[in-house]
Image (cartoon, rainbow, N blue to C red; front, side):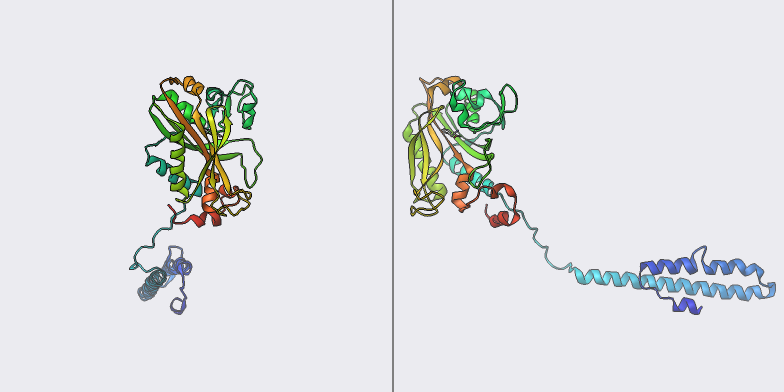
Length: 333
Ligand code: PHE
């Protein structure tokens, strides 16, 4: 009796131990009941009553301890969590800076009637080169260090998003006004300025009487919308097999504002892409009559634009997934 009264039950394990020791079917009280038959018949009644008292005592102690334990666990739960507080807002992730800029580019062009088209990253020779007027065995094909996926060089990772121009012109009739953002691949050494996987956004406008003036005005509008109204745009004569005439697109360096820095290498200008009038051969290859239609196209690097916009000096940050870098774009949409 004293033993039962003195037993300490402080946690669930001790509670269970107490139950097994005294109350369980193999416990001490059960054993005493078993021994009742050894007691002389005239004493059996008295001893039986004593044993029942003992059993009730143990049972009471168990129930008390159970109640107490339940109360203390509820207590700690209550103090560590206040159910009356309003819910904690869930923490959101951040958008990747390249996605932010891609979305912004899409919004800017959507305002002047461009829609968005997409194409596969694994391409064939036709869409990446031949339809785009790259001559067979011509060194121009080597301009872009291609990852070929098959021995016959007919399966490859697209080196530019101009492949989507071809697909769009093959599938739809003019007027066409579309931009085509996407991932492209080139076999280049990874550095602060180059990567073997990066993003471009292509633009294509094909209709009757589209002129170089339309191309220039479209890109002026774009640059000012994205980088601010003070931004200047410069076109430099260039060459691409799929455009004629062709021009490189430069914008005034926003980081040094013309003072000369290591992003623009002191020139005050940064190249963001290429452009030109769609070569009549390309229109023809894609089933569009070059006598009836003309068009312009441009292609820009999204990494380069993002670096300028957010003053990021190392391209590798985009792919390293350093949370400290990504967190800097918290709240930007
Ligand atoms: N496809 C070219 C490149 O990747 C860019 C470009 C696109 C140039 C469209 C002219 C017209 O370098």
